[in-house]
Image 1 (tube, helix red, strand yellow):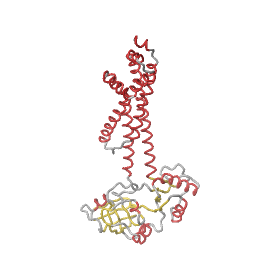
Image 2 (tube, helix red, strand yellow):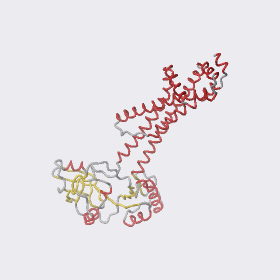
Image 3 (cartoon, helix red, strand yellow):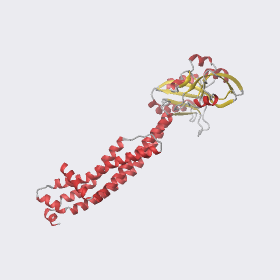
Image 4 (tube, one colour):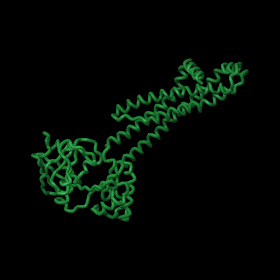
Length: 397
């Protein structure tokens, strides 16, 4: 087979134009598959980077749904007894966090910033992997006693304190027409933070919210922390079913997780990539038909060579193998060039689109193997035709 392959390379060099045209369909097909799968993988990677790595183990539960179809859905109270029920009834729950929200107008000097503030429990920001640029997190005592401290995002800090040094400064907060004084306990570092904002977020102890803003409140939102991020998608289904069974109606709560959203978006991206890859692979089949046509012409042109080989004792199997190796050699070379061109174009496209570079090695391997298979499949008929030629007729031309 090595000699057949070397002989095939010599034949390729004798008819460069014909070889190039034969290679073109295979190169385009393989390169297209590589480009499409690489862009798909890059899109998935960008989605993951956009959402960030934190918060992937969280499932959010809030009352009702914004586009709820069932207007008769029964409301549900997010009180402490419901927290215990969730923890005991739902599998793979590490901890259940409660939080509330309120609209704050924060003033320092002549500057006022209005934004939604989130009342959280001790350890919540640490669990979300939100890092502090300066200051300190809320302690357990701060949250239980309802200390009037505040942790703010980087953009809020730069708006209120353009000169920096926000930690320790006192601000005036107006909530529901009631003024409160707060001390800035910390400033968050700007980062991709998943479900919570490290730039525009405003966080206060939930104990203050329950004592001064709304006594003994129910939670506005429940955050279930899963043991592992991989459990979140199933946990969304489990929590939804549990609440539906508890209330007897659908739409009583809106349950979602960042991991399930990423999985859904990645699934859509992968499906589109597979569909486009299948369409691109059609060009490989078209290239295979072209190779079959070229090989039929080659067999016709080389009848005398076939006759001489048979007269010297070459078996039909050896003749068949010779042309199969030549056909597979074309697609092997085309597959290799297609992968190289596909990778180069993928890098150029993703660089121009400012996308993170990603490549599926499995796509390279599959497209390469498929291209060789196409060469063998479409080269089989001409090879069998060559092996069955009568030596006398072949020598006669």
